[in-house]
Length: 357
Image (tube, rainbow, N blue to C red; front, side):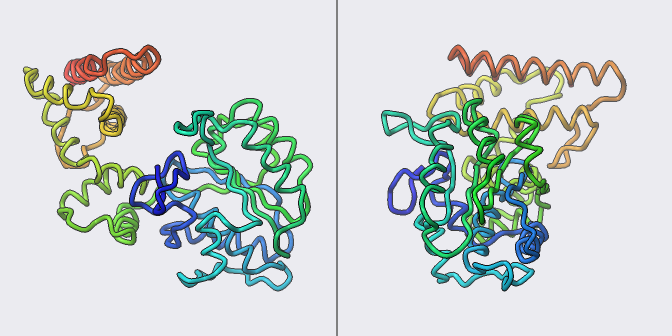
């Protein structure tokens, strides 16, 4: 995606939304930020922190805000034991925001050789940027911070390269290793890090975050509430739901499930709408919404819009919904791997959902 200056600067940036390094408003994770600030001021700051939590809840924003805090405090012996939110014109935060702070290294997926498309993994070449970063004197007389964002994207060679650095860390350096799920990381990486867990945001916190970004303007209050419920505590997902009219998409999906005889005309209509390659974001959002619906059916929960779709009442019902989950997962994986017809994936999904309901 492109930043405000039109430059391609991050593989996962959403147009019109501040990058985490630019966003000073961290909502719902103040205690985690306070804990890091307190650890830094104690003089016993661990050199590596594994910060895990679901995608889009603010891990990278927290990491960038803590990096700014470290750069402003400079010396732990004189640092305040709590986080102080900086002014919007703070010179340190301006340098963090534009990627120009010499003591911050933000490791994210790089571009492919064509200079146009992003890599699907965080490669060893990216991790090796630490060699030049740590091989020179600190640009300013402060600690240095390296953010790995996210560690889930590390390939094997990159993970081993990161492990080597964590085993022999440079002095006055803090690694913030972000992970959506730490289970996929090397056990040796996990063992080198102190662990911090960031929880999904509450519905009101999601709404507050959307308001702080100015993304709630023009949206109906009812749709905003539904978006907050469907977001799973992820601001990123809430933004995608708003951009892709996800509340209406969800309502359409629910209306086509468990109504006796399936309305195949309408189902074909929604499948044709979502299948084109240029509707990829909306297609992925639909799959996520369907995945969450199946999960709620397995748990026997009510739908976010208050509607009722029969859930698991016994072992046989539970088995049916688990089978839908597995069939859908396999179908999507095959379609992605072999470039199969997405429309058929959606039709098969509706067929499985209606059979289970």
